[in-house]
Length: 208
Image 1 (cartoon, one colour):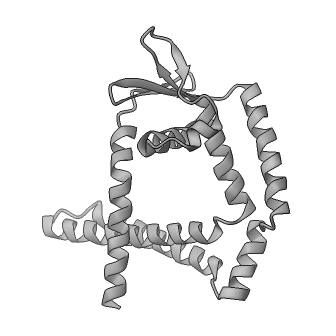
Image 2 (cartoon, one colour):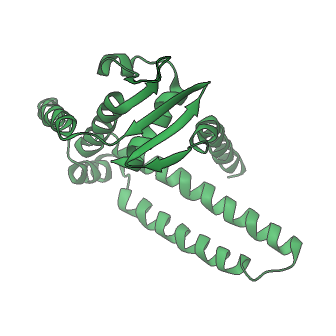
Image 3 (cartoon, one colour):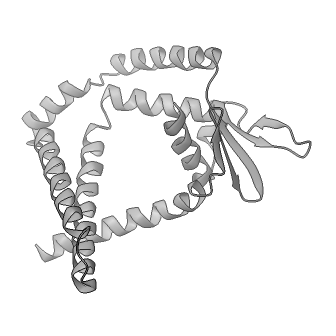
């Protein structure tokens, strides 16, 4: 059990480390105005905006094609996948949901304890407990997402977000004009700047 706990802590730390650079960028957001988020990154100014009706139509058409492709390839809808996981592998996704909800309640109780606590040592102990519960909850959320990643809904959601990110991310050029960062979807998918891609995805989720 000690080895399992250590492994979980290591996973949580690795996830936190991976997200740290992205967090540094996203917290530099300058403003959200007129459905546009503008932010600086590596001495350039970028922005993410809401899609036009035409862009929504383009992404929706792509989503329909993707769904038909996934069905032909034998992918399952989420409800079917949950049943399959339980029957064939003994993985109970609904039980994971129950654990996530229980941890959320425990976190809330600890936060309620923290608010009136004045003793510094006690406050630090409660904060540590809250962080441990959040780490455990986050691991379960990631685990559930991994189990459901092959579902048609998850695949379509990812496809839609990536499509919007590739279409809507813009950068200000030397002429002070806004231009698209990516010429097409393939260029976005092949981008090696993981931080910029992750920030673009983050802001799409904020705006869409």
